[in-house]
Length: 427
Image (cartoon, rainbow, N blue to C red; front, top):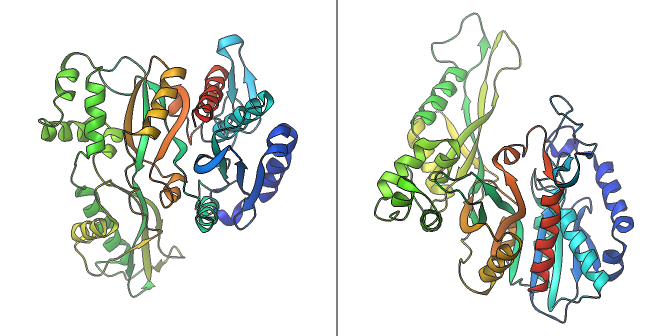
């Protein structure tokens, strides 16, 4: 895709990808049932029939990617170039981490297990979305189809956290962060309708000035910070492995909540997003001509709603912060925060065992995912939805997601394949 607009998607590239899969993974396509869903039939659902079908699992990933141009990349973003030797080999490409790397790791794992003659104890579904980065309609269509058939998975595993070194202050060991929920994602428009006219005789308060004032007010009144139960559990878990003052503070998270909320709000953009609903004005629209007063001025606000809050509570805060009845505030594509999946019980323990096997050095912790994923749709049919990409990455590599020079170490990708193999064996 050259842009992120759905209507400008190059569907021919998706057709080429889907056509290539049977050649690359012949055993998968010989043994598994394949269905195509969504408006263009590019959302793929594979069913691997197991010895029973009462507690299936779903391995979820998406193969669409965010746009990229060659500008600023060390290697062309869609050339999939390999560099280095041995343990230093790198694969450079848009999607290696988000999220084609997981798609092909899952397929590699299933192809390998089929070569062994392995049959899972329960049905295994592979769900590959085609528009996660835009609207997620492909995953939604797959969920609708499974619901109609009465399929209720025991567990869903999608992209999300990873095994990251140096991400949390005071913790020297790598941390495997498994998302048990995700923030709600909602688009809010702030609109001012006003009389237009020639720009040579402007009123004191034009539509754009009123809108700018609303944006400034919103920016000056952030949402209150709070630590959810998952946040507290994460801090306590990491506290047991932290050093110095961090250990003293983290292990007393429940007693030191006000202090920790304040610290998280000041440490950086990511930690601030962990403890509150966030807003970001991403698009502005005004007049169609340089010398005409706008009759409508509009700002688009991307809102990420914290677990424990709601769309209604968010809109109430926005209207109170803006405090101007002439600014119309409306929500579109509103999504509530996802339900919180359990951090105990057989499904969580299964994840924990496999993580411990593949990444024995890592500390496992739950967390709340800040971004949105296709997994939010699966919460309608499954209570145990986990967001974990089984790749060990550095903080630097983490920051290439949706950015330049996205890449993955080949050794990391191979460990990811092993994770999916062991997870399927554990079903």
